[in-house]
Length: 188
Length: 195
Image: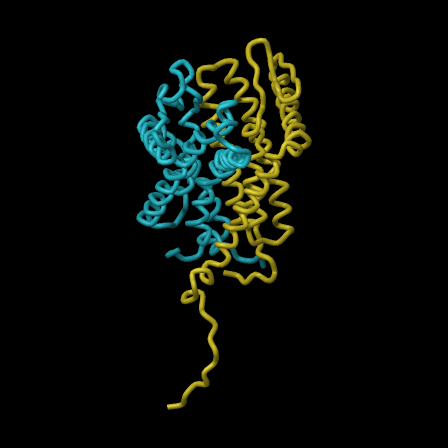
């Protein structure tokens, strides 16, 4: 019976340590948490809030006000506030789509994919999230005008869920369909 | 995954479609459970807060089905309700969690429900911790001279930043993070390089 020459074996994915077996998944989760925590810490700084987030939010208010005017609402905009004689909303953090965008951006950047896939995903995903957010602001304003009793629930529960879920589902769809692995990444 | 590999398009698309179908049933269950869960959260968070104070001074009082007051017993009765918050806002991410976990295609129901159970358990602990941070944040930063007297600059920043990070990014992303923890392997297994 001939003996096979023994060669040093590298641990197979099934028998390696927990880290070795789940390296790609754990790297994704750690990177996601780090990017997300870092970006939210960044936007919590007053300077960033005043010079980036507030102007961005004011832009959303302006655009939402424009859509409401097209729908026949007699609204005026001032900074992040949209008002008409019956109702007014002040768009704050949490309602400007920035949270959903940052979750989406962190997930796209953390996921193993080529930069081309990432950049395409970021551009289309951010656009889609902002379109959904525009619908949210317009719908919430109309809810406040015509159905004020359900404004609170609609504001904090229904639309938050829709916008964040939209961002997550967009990411899953992107990761599954468009996130081409980098050339060095072996196919699974 | 126990089944044969499907085309990369269909897994993600199937998940998105399943998620849309699960939104209404999960929302109904969440709505029905909310009053009971709010009571449970307030009781648990009150106990957690009291672990950090001696003698016990904090009460978390229900205002109605959705709101709660933070009451300090060492304050004059007219000023004892020092803070209020909407408890229901703490846990609406359970809705997202349920939808995401139930929507995963081609996973046996037993595994799906087991994973959902673990994720819900982790989320419950997170929700209790978040209310704890709400209370500490209020004590450290919202009570004027009393806050300045009892909390130093580091503490105020710690509770402030902690509440900000838990209340926005981690509350919003927790369902996704848990989903990714359980299912990103399945997702990655579905991805193949383009021809």
